[in-house]
Image (cartoon, rainbow, N blue to C red; front, side):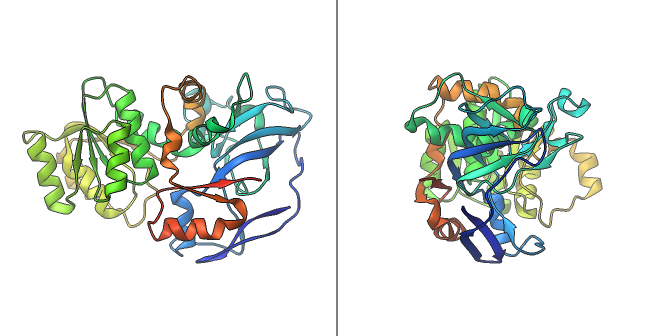
Length: 339
């Protein structure tokens, strides 16, 4: 088959590779119904993350099981499944505590920007639907695999509560999903920081009550003005840069909580500021598996439509253009159609 390989910065190729096969009895092979490009894929694409040789790309996936290993018990061929980008056994102490992304056996999914993919730890990673979803549902189910689950974790980690005030830093796909999550959790006020009209519009659609276009000190001042000088009790940091973390720290009230899910690049903390700021912080790779059953149900019931975050759809063979469009901010998130 052909699959997406990143050979170096800016060098994405759709080229022939070996078909995936069962390597361990806990594996499953799935036929992708759709896949997509993640914002985190742009870090190595831009040369900002270390890469040792060509890399199989893709960690967001949903599709139909075609083969399972001898030890797999919870999914079977013919079932439609969604899995997390963090592979987990769902039985270790960390999984039992709700942090599947720190599973004792865990690893990260790779190779999902392809027609077929191997999913290790299938029993603990994949969740099957009762029935086969129709074509219109596929983008929404795909979004659950990472971007919605990550945005949801940001809101959960930030302790978003009913009637609360939330600030979302970052208007990429994860930030927009954070807006959706905060709204679903009952926040009364959801302030999205965004300078881009299409993203502002989608943020409104997902439940943002206010939009702040300013950045830096001006952005912090605007948030403080909107909150009568108090700040927000829940802040979602969905970028991972020093500037975005400064924004998050600057608008979080004392006693408030920052949920951070942006992969950190150049982020450092002033210990004295942390001490006197009295802000809680929780984040890291999202334990999406914890949220999968609930989020899949919400999608299937039509309560949420996270697939709206895909504003560019391309055939999988045109994956290089999908990367380029996201890198140039011509697209929020690219869905890759598997044909």
